[in-house]
Length: 455
Image (cartoon, rainbow, N blue to C red; front, side):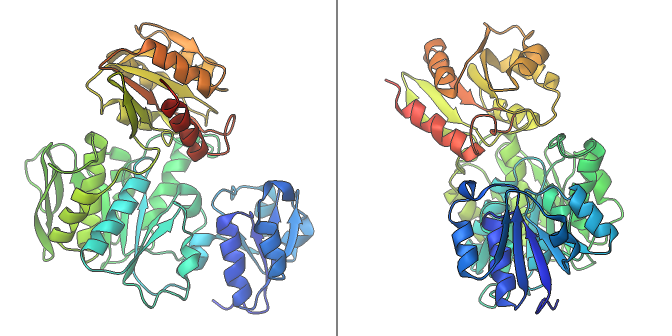
């Protein structure tokens, strides 16, 4: 892909957008960055862009920049459905995302992980499994390190492992993963997609450019994942959280509480043992199975897979134990920004839970939580814009009570006052953070601070 001398518009100035602009500038492109945010909200990025001779248009988008572009590259957080982008495409101007651009300049094989929940854990676990197998690995994508950062710098690497969101898959054209992992598909981002089907189709695009030498690692018991695996060109490796109905399994993985049996004909056959892993709960056993299959398909060893699993540390903000005080367990699950993630978190506990939920609703129906709250939650505390919707949807469950809190600080104090020895206090919001915090990370950090301040 030759970009030298081309007018390229980068939409979205944050880490990913800046990385794209920086790369394009080194390739001789004429780069402009546009962002709806004002300069004071964009940190140090505007200053860096100006030092590189990149034009900036902040505080809104100018149509003239879109219509004069030879290529438009959008950051992951920018909806590809923006009117200016649609209008540009109607004029024949190509619109792609950072992942698509990066893949055109990368030579090493790519392992791509997508799904509604578990992406970050699985991506990081695959990276460590391959590293423990003796490979030189880049780990990034939607989890902090943009793929574009290794474009034309991958000669010292053996493989790249990337988390890929549905937003990034919306704008791929030639992006091809040697190993593509689709963990699950449950309702998410319904504030951005017209319906659940549209969201599912975006996830399914993960497989569209694969060939016969590639692998697709798929949830064998998820009907939607299986729907999008049908008819693809790669070899399918299913992982099964419960035994297959016909009692037979030619290849893939079968999960039990203590071990995972894996089989990839001609490549690997054995077991992954779970005695020493810090990853708990049924959903994490699925993540481990998917990661193990992906790592083995990408050239890893069973020894490396086991070693990495035994040493793996739980990612921040995902069922992360903060502390135990008066025999009350405090758990930070701020990354749980959809309903299914909360269900998966609750399944990890065999003790009563005081649950803190709420934030900005991403278009969810919270009623599927009702039976899980009834079974496991002794008290529900809601915060943020979605508080009333949560109460209306699941407040009828027979818990000891449902309370609203005006802030996360108040919610933590109410939870502490309610909990007794042997209980767990769980922050698992099922919502975005943007009504009260800049990100789920900031929300999780605040929860940590508040919990550590309790006496």
